[in-house]
Image 1 (spheres, rainbow, N blue to C red):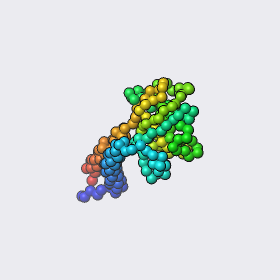
Image 2: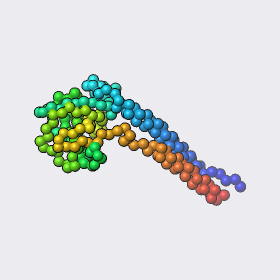
Image 3: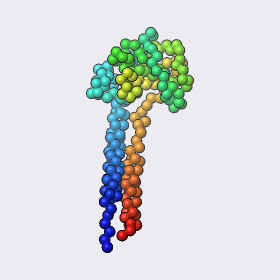
Image 4: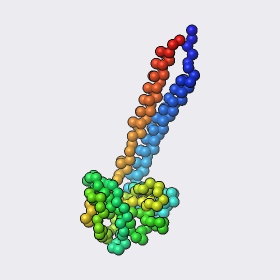
Length: 208
């Protein structure tokens, strides 16, 4: 007597296996995209400093200045504390980054600064007071450090120097971007293979 395949389990298994294989292929495509992005960001570090016009283009979404070099001047009486957030020192010690917003910056949208500068790193969660800033910061630009929040700065400058008594903070590099796509792809392919084996065992042990 012939054995007919159960319709519902078979359809569900086929759909799930195909979905898992599709997710694995998508992760491989994401891996290629990530490698291309990292190469692009590495090349961005060699470009000339970002101009105000390029900043405005980045705000409009027509250009990216991620990991580009920029120079921002903060003079006495023209700097205000802005924020304190977790970060690492240049020697990769955990602590806090002290952010400042220079008045009359190259950018402004009327609701707050569009660019903040990391004045330095501190091990304590208290912002130094008073913080006297008179420097021209030369550093790396990070786009959307606060995500897509409308009332937060769109750019952060992370210099290699610091304002006393703060210490230099760690400057991010493109290799910091996570690249786990290959392992995720193998996981999805493994799930698909495992489900296929379970289905085959189910069919073979099913009563005639």
